[in-house]
Amino acid sequence: MPRHIIIFLIAALAGISAPAAADSIKRIVHPDGRVEFTNVKSDNPGRVSSKNETVFRYKDTNGIVAYSGARPSVADFDVISFHCYACNPNSRVNWRTTPLFSGRYESEIKKAAEAYDVDPALVRAVIHAESAFNEKALSPVGAQGLMQLMPGTALEVGVQNAMVAADNIRGGVTYLAKMLERFKGDTRLATAAYNAGPGTVSRYGGIPPYAETKAYVERVGILRERYASH
Image (cartoon, rainbow, N blue to C red; front, top):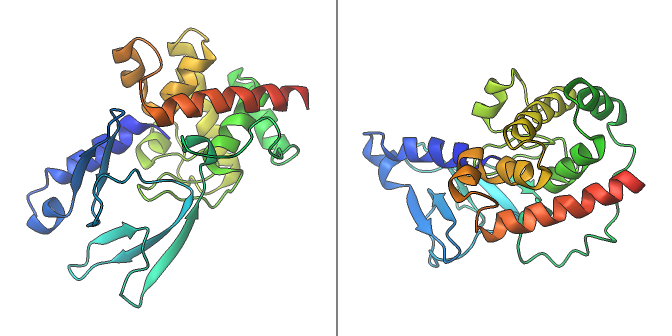
């Protein structure tokens, strides 16, 4: 899920002149350098939000869409279960033994991988890392589907409905192929860019010092090896 697009979109929102929207967005800088934006008040603003949790989506009293890990007091809300196991630095999953999703979306992955000359095992690894093969996955910041495409990324790669599995895979592979081309086939840098954004990788001259990104790159590599030999 490209971090630079997430930050750009939410930072843009923070600059909107409407007081309710601007005042509701907070910027948190974590010790490892990650920047988090949230529009939900918390008693523990320094908490590192985990993607392995249930998220509630609702409209607050001002009619603004809000996301929270705590059940809201309003009667009307949606429950979003989002699991990005490979993004959580504190995950206790054994990545060398955790069950694989071999066989799922085989034709869609094969078609997209061949079209953009990307290793299908890498595609599977990224899907596993991003959504655990949940085609309905939706993150609190709007990343959608199997390969967790942000709306801006989806438009960039020509995907109109990111919740359609085949289109999501095609779009995700298209973007992944762009990252591989930009970083001269270096899979670790390409997957780091998929997570944190290509500009961030270029700025640091390698994998960014974000705990989430470093864990993500390592785990995608393990999953890729396992899918390739499965």
